[in-house]
Image (cartoon, rainbow, N blue to C red; front, top):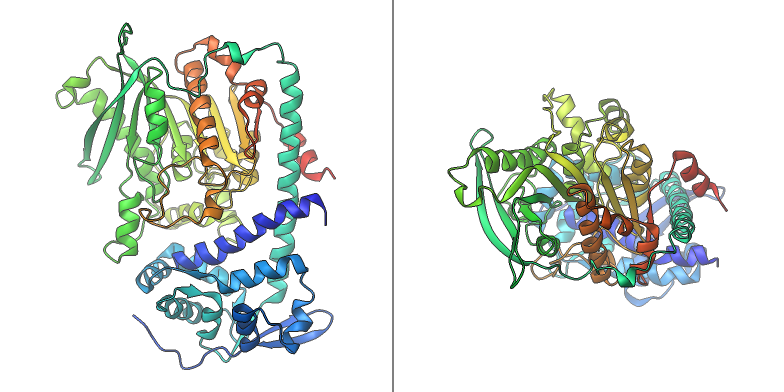
Length: 559
């Protein structure tokens, strides 16, 4: 087995868990007239085969391989059989209400329909209601939703696997993983090459941006009420406070933090506090249409699902916040003179990354949305969310101008942008941009959502930071499964998230000091040499300022 294959196995296990666990857990009782007793598929060149569901269940529960199953299981590498069995055994703790709510939403329906192309009835047709019924019934099990139970509860005597489609997806996924590994390796080499030319910098003698700055951090909470959109949302404002013998000199440049789906103001509070100690005012808002509270209410059956309109409302939340602080001086008299509202930065994570990019000047790639979402056959999970823009286009919703001229720099972590903004949209951005991603991110994969988009940016000042072995959630805080809306499995959090969060703290200080305050002494930190200085295993940090489409293509093709 090659080193590359060994590296991919944990990722394959994670993506299988996410596709089965994450999708199934996002996905009252009705009793089907039939249940699947056999699984059928066509295996070229040997023809049609069927496996008893009993054989699968025996293997899952006991680890015993029956005579009929042996023919197939022996073709799976021994190292992967344990992972396969673990996947079959795993139970996902979700309730039937959550499954029902999600699968009745437009986004959930698209996900189930996509699964339906893989799992079909005996007549070789995908059946949305059959699969939805099986998922709900399995979720009703007190022990949790399980893949074998879904098969058992599928309302057809035989569940037919679209083996050609599955095999095509498997081959495509393998190719994508190989390309990802080559690109990550290529970025490491590029970082090393760039760092050699910067070897004369001794960072041990420069201020350590990983530790707090010279100010204290104070917090006050605000409530924004946009009457025009009937939208109320909370904002936590972190302000620099003086220490002994230190004088804070307002106005402070403002940085706005936009969270991702099912996150809240606490998710990136650690970044806000850190930036405040370096003299920035930081506003952490909550987007009411897609925050943790909204998703919790939705999954509890107390609220409607998040709307496609969120693609518009999120950037409008930030614009409204800035307008209120700038215009409504009577309501925020205590803040007058403290904030510089003409030199604003934005930090965004995931959906918040999309939000930041639109505020920076990216617009909808209408042709790309129509081309890639009708239908959506991507393996990129974030495309399900990005293709909600297609609903806006189909409903002839007028897309307002989302760019805000007050935004002078944006730092985005694990953003989604490849389809909804695309090359056409991202090329419009003229302000400095820092893109951050993780090599093990299966929600917004690094190559299509961060590396490719980096090559599309035309802005003069752009930076790409890729954290090897980091996931979609490595930079997030407050992921305690006992409190989270959707418990995040350890595999999806990844190793040592505190290291990734250290990268965010130090790079955000350097980026905004350089591009909001034009302090040239912070430019050396925005370099490959600095990334190597702070890089820690197992989360190696690569950092580049230049990468062309042609160079990226060569990386992907390199053997």
